[in-house]
Amino acid sequence: MPSPPESRSRPSTSRVLVPLGIGIALSLLGDSTLYTVLPKPDIAAQAGVTLALVGVLLGINRIVRLGFNIIAGTLYDRFSRRWLMIGSLSIGTISTVIYAVSTGFWSLLMGRILWGAAWSGIWIGGTTLVLDIADEQNRGRISGQFQMWFFLGIGLSAFVGGFFTDTFGFRNGLGLSAFLNAMAVLMWIFLLPETRSWRDSAHKKTTSTVIKSFPWRPIIIASIPVFAIRFVYAGVMASTTILWLTSLLGEQLTLSKVAIPIATLTGAFVALRATISMFGGPLAGFISDTYKKRWLVITGILVFGAGGMWFMGGSAIFLALIGALIASTSGGGVQALIPAIIGDKIDQTQYGRSFGAIYAIGDIGSALGPPLALWLVGMLSINFVYKFCACFLILVACFAFWRSISERSSS
Image (tube, rainbow, N blue to C red; front, side, top):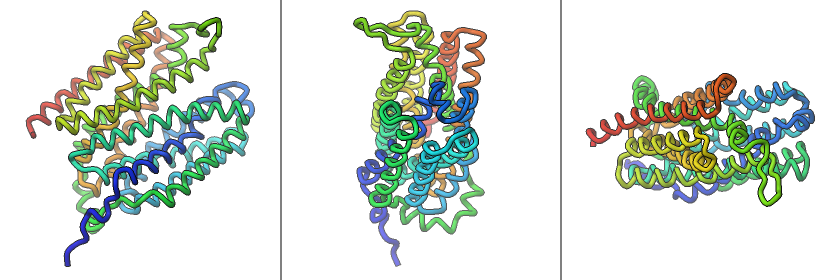
């Protein structure tokens, strides 16, 4: 008896990406609100924690993801993608409710651990769904569009989280964010389709063979640029942007006799940087799909980002700001192409565990970046730290260029 055609189980790109992107953008509201407002002493006091404990709360979700990523990846290879995504977003909603109603370190810590588990499921699941609906002709473009939704969510959630807090108060603002999270869960229940294909279902019986032949080599190779990007952007830059802007502009920026405090300026700059990052993924995906040279495109992106980081480490204000905008395009570009590379090399039955391993390594980079950067800033200048990151990106670009030679040879 012939198998059902795979096309019956592959929904259209827009049918998956639109609800997926909206849900991921809304899921970031609670987390972004904490990053935006919790470091303020008065807000921390409302939450019942000291500023020292704020740092622990903001970082613990990345640490716990090291384990949750592997668990999530294994689950996505075995069970329904759709219901795992819905369950992950539901856990994220519960974490935001905990932020809104609890006081004190331990209850907030539980909320952050739940968010770490939720984001592992949301991010690995979302990337897996994207590859399910893509093929070798459009993997880069579709992955780039997915990254665009992610960076849109970062920018909007940071702004909206701060606005909700200023307008409704810390707890009421988080309550509203939790309500929007719940609406996203309902949207996924009604609109998000299942993307697991008939082919994948036919392979369920080969699980033991798949485990024995797990492709560690291509996964480790793909993890290297992810580690570098997470270390530099989610680690170093995310934790030192306010220090970098202060070194350039002082404690405030005066425009037309209006003084903009450095914290407000930092928030606006982060939103601008996220907006620019939106375009890096689709552009990189389009180029890599057109010329079939994914590693060569990654090489160019990393060199481009390294140039931006080097300018950021300079003393000329204009060049430093331009460098920051240039560097912002790199993160989205690399993160769009790595899923495409995995889709090119690895069987669909191994997507979940592959991304679980890759993003676990990436989370190590994002966890190491802040303490190392702040430790170096304590001894050296922020300019040196950014130039160090530029050199690191060049080193990884050399690795990517070496891979591009292998890519060309195999072609």
